[in-house]
Image (cartoon, rainbow, N blue to C red; front, side, top):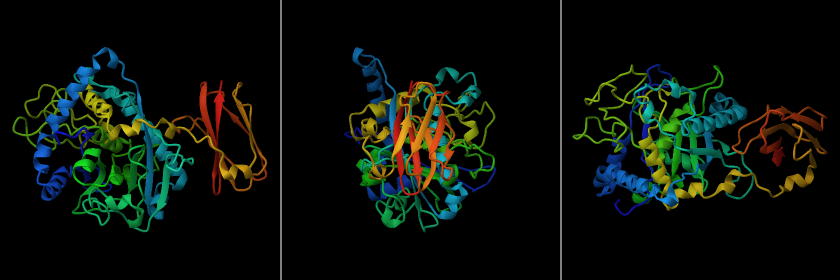
Length: 458
């Protein structure tokens, strides 16, 4: 452990007691994971016992270096993300089919970019005592636009599996930990895209075991590098009922998990954060802490929506920071990362190791410039480009199989309503007068392929 600079994060299973229960009980599976790893690796016990202090040492070194002339400016880091939706057809239908899944993908990215950049509207609900501690991680997430083979993608794939769900405590493929079966096509899942370039997120239906429901699990690089877990398993597994952010009252979500915060929480672990109570119940110094000074000592996890202040471990008058993203409260009741947590995440992203690979490939966020083979069969004209008066006209000479036309920004977020194809119509006008100057992408979706063109709005 002392030699490893790949300590990117921490690993957590977020468990819930009932699928649609109003009081969703969530438990961390870290104790079970530790026991499994300790049984297999004699050094694991010391590894986990010393991990918080080691992480803090790295953070202090980073902060010291950051104050030098060469390191004063911290630029925004953008991480390419790919979602592997691995569900049965009935579960896909439950999410609204392909259109519903696309909406959830976009809403999830939007939620992450708010939460990690101090832009979430509910930040105003943070108690005044904790407001000075709020930090801005300055981390953005973008849907990958290139697949590993260089072809275009919208940043997600839908895999229809015959499996009803996936075990998270055990598996038959790979490591057997953390939903490994979901990460291999051979076992009914989806193979990872290069994990040194993409943040892979598998959206699945976890199989309930022992009355507990798992909402999310993260496998960070240090688990891969120190415990023999294949690198193809690095990433996050997410319950499909906690995927995305609610945009309609009719959407299916697990109770109180409809604001996208499960993934915010799990990415926190991927970027070096612990639960704020230290993963073992009790008060410091007898029990471990998260190693971050500006998160108050806390006896154990909080659930539901506690009333402020909730005091434990003699941390009055303000009590537990239960509204922190790294506690277990309901989605509508968690609002912030602290500056100390931000320092930890930025430290982990600054390490010149494999983990930084997620930020070294900005081309993954750009649509491929090569012409698809299918495009030679479909003449598509965009006029004018650049768009100088806010109106774009698209003319197609071959409209067979056209389903819809979409316009997105560089992050993959729609900037205009999708246009459904009209039979026999080969000309479409799009209003972009509300768009700021910049680069956008138009996607013509056909039955068997998509054609993507870059446009510029003046």
